[in-house]
Structure formats: C-alpha cells, structure tokens
Amino acid sequence: MSSRVGSLKIYTETKKDKIEELPAKSTRYRAVESIIDLGLSVLETPEGRESLVNVAVATITQRREKKKHHLYGNHSLDDMPMWINEFLTRLRGSFPDIYIVKMEGEGMAIKYEWGDDMASYYPKSAAELRLNRTILHNIIGAESQAGSHSYDMFRFQMVVTVAHEIIHFLIGYLTGKKQPHTPPEVSLAPYGTMVTGESGRYWESLLLGGVVEFYEDSRDPLGNMQAGTPYLIADGRKSAPARLISTNYVNEFLSGNFSFPIRTSSTTKPTTRSELRKISRETSALRRGRNATTNTSPGRPSTSFTERSDPAASYGGMFQEGEASGTGTASSSSAYSRALCRLR
Image (cartoon, rainbow, N blue to C red; front, side):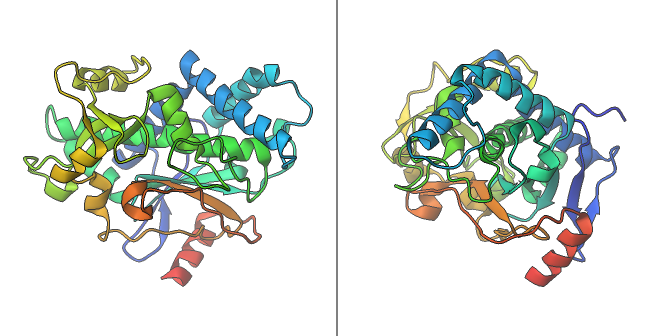
C-alpha cells in the first residue's frame, strides 16, 4: 500500500494489555491514515500555513522577551514560513507513531526532548500521538451504515483533533526540550494559566474562528456512542457565543474543499455554551468514566502531554498543557507494552 503519510506506524492495545502494530491494509489503519492525511492537509493550505506561522512567531517572540529557551536562535521572524514549510514536510514524510488507547479526550500529543537543532528535527524521535479507541471503533461501525451522519461527524471531530495536536508538536519543534511551556500569551481565554498557555486552542481561534465542540443529540440512536452535533464556540467562557456548524461545510471539509474560518448555519439561531449545557452534554462527558485516561508515556518517561478534551467540565473552566518530568528515549511497541503492564 502506498501511504499518503510517510513511515506511518499505528499501534493498538489488545485485550491482553499488549501493544500490536496494525497492518497497513487493515480497516482501522486506513481509517486513521485518512484522518491524519486530512489533518495535515488542513495545515498545508495557505491559511493553515499562515496560522502555524502566527503561532510560531507568537511563541518565539514571547520566549525571546522572557529569555526562555528555544531553538530558533537569531533567525529573523520573517524566515518563519520557511521553517513551517520544513516542519510540515517532515511530518508528512515521517509522522510520529500513533497509539490507539483508552482515554477520555479525543487525542493527546506526547512530546519528548529530542535535540537542539531545528534543522535535524525528526518527528518520530520528537513525539507520538494518542487517539481515542472508542471514537475510532465508532467510526468503523458508522462507516458500514450508508449515508451515516455519525460517520462524517466522527471524522470531522478527529481531523480537527489531529490538527490541534500537531500544534503541540510545533511547540516541541521550536523548543526541543522536555518541558517547553507555551507562553501564557499564546492561548485563548480562559484556557491556560498565568504560567503556561494552550497553543492548540490559540490555533483553533486563529484558523477555525473558535473552538469546535460536539454536543449530545438526545434523538441519536447511538446514545453515549454518538459523535454529537458540532458547534463553533468563540472561546472557553461559559457565556461564549456558540453557533451550529453547517452540515454542508463539514461535507466540503471532509472532501478536501477547505475554507476558513468554519462556516456556521445561517438558519439556526446562535446560543451560548452555558445555554447548550442546560439542555445537552458535551460528548466527551458522555465518554468520561467509561474510559480511563493514560496520563504517562509508557516506555518514554521524558514527556509533555496535552489532551484535547472538555476543559470546563474537567478543570473548572481552566486547562493547561501538562508536563511530566524525567528522562528516557526508548521508543518501541515492546517498551510501550512493558510499561503499560506496569501501569495496570
């Protein structure tokens, strides 16, 4: 099989708490590959590249002002588009390994201390990506249903998730360290803290026009397994305006016909996050309690992890990029399996 994403390796947990690599011709592999391809494609558009440049420039500007570590050296910020192009080229050619695991959120970026020269960036040594096993299982199930609304919504949700997590990879690309805090200025209210920002949400606001959240449809026969209804919400506040995302937009997006910001329904009255939560639940809350989140990086303890999920429900409206200290550079499915067994 000729992969659209170079050197893509995808691993999944088995019932015996072991990790196995998915065959490239398997249904799950193809489903994940398609999502990664689309996530990269979003960022490879002119608008996507510009949004990455803006995130990177804001990050380096703040780190320079505060004399914090970074790898950009004395390069002119005008050269950032070149470095972003290189970042995307390397991701497309050698994407970090992917692990399909039990977790609450949709996805999680795991970053490692990988080096001190951006020109030597190798994505597989710098990061890995965790994706929600339940959601991917539901995507496979929904695909078999002709004209399934849930299939498209699950895929849209996960493509946005992958693009969001790649922004965290970008911070690692710019810093190389195991604890590369995003500057608090690189965030979207009220995500982040006084110490660290939230680059993924910052990026969503720049390119998408807000954060994407899915809310329960009580009429959906899939119940707790549903994708939900997508809304574009201005920021993380409870009072933030929320608008239903156009179904036609989602269809165009999934066909690779990208336009930004996200287009919302012109026939549905805007609401707010707090009003939505009076009548519905954010779909990550439906999964919470059924899936245990793995918050450490098995086999590679020198990590920084960031999970795209519902911050207001989990953290009282505040979300920060987590850090786990330590050292270690092993990267293999066997190392992952051994550590996973120890965790459980």
